[in-house]
Image (cartoon, rainbow, N blue to C red):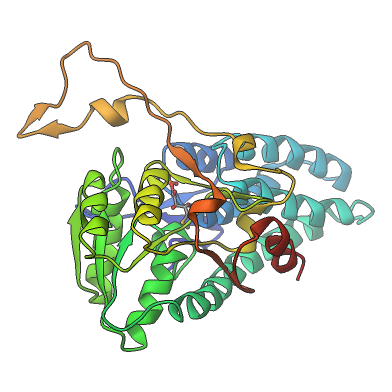
Amino acid sequence: MRTVFWENNELKMIDQRILPARFEVLSYRGHKEVAHAITDMVVRGAPAIGAAAAFGLALAGYESASTSTEGLIADLKASAAVLKASRPTAVNLAWAVDRLMRVAEKMKDERNADTVRAAILTEAQNLADEDVAINKRMAEHGAALINDGDTIIHHCNTGALATVDWGTALGVIRTAHEQGKKIHVLVDETRPRLQGARLTAWELEQYGIPYEIISDNMSGYFLKAGKAQKVFFGADRVAANGDVANKIGTYMLSLAAKDNNVPAYAVVPTSTVDLSLAHGGLIPIEERNTDEVLGIQFQGEPIAPKNAKARNPAFDVTPNRLLSGIVTENGVVYPPFDVNLKKVVKE
Ligand code: MRU
């Protein structure tokens, strides 16, 4: 089953807030509800939210009462803005919405508005199907970097749940496992929302890949002790110079990897690369509600005093100098990233 899919004129999405306790699929008929589901992280992971927003815009087409193509495009523009505002860091969201808007705008002279509605739904479906194919290509390129017997530290969730299907960094691990390589995964729990402990561990169970969960602050220990040979993660946005915004904690993990000469790879579809931003300092970083940090319990009790304050940036930027390579569907990009990244994105 896909994480995000269209069925019976509805968008369906696996509810990632409640996994692994329960597996439920929710249905959506309106773009505002889809935008809310993205903000609330029913669906999360850069490519998955891109696909969700694409189908959300297709829903907006059917919500619009306009009988003219001009009116429909005006309604779609307003809905596109709502969807794009749902989360700021992952560029795939704006990329997907803009791709669908281009299809609609090219059809501005079409007399039948329903033809435009159908065309954007088809484009959303194409985008979702392409995501799976791209992930599998990335996985082949990335799996070549993994040796039999490797222990890999993985951050956040980058699997089928973070994409339409298969995954980015976890897709690489999955393909290496299918190739018969014996690998072990140290799963960063990924505070505060625990995408590693909840979602990556759940996926690894489905695939039969051996793993152990570690708290985020343990990775330096394992890297220094020579107990991990590779580090893999995804990204929400990659700047033109190869700086990578990814789930909070990626920067510290990459620093520890670099200090111990352990290669660290980001695995990203080229739709995650934002060549319009010269460096990672320009990437908008989402600050989420601090309830995510303070709401966790320890032995049935709140983890902090009642009036405690907290901070909650959801992403950080890893400077390109800490990365050994960036795996894309068009191959593995090596430094100098400012020169080499452009070549694969243009392809
Ligand atoms: O806040 P999330 O769970 O949406 O963050 C997801 C990540 O940081 C992933 O690593 C990233 O989207 C790339 S994985 C496809």
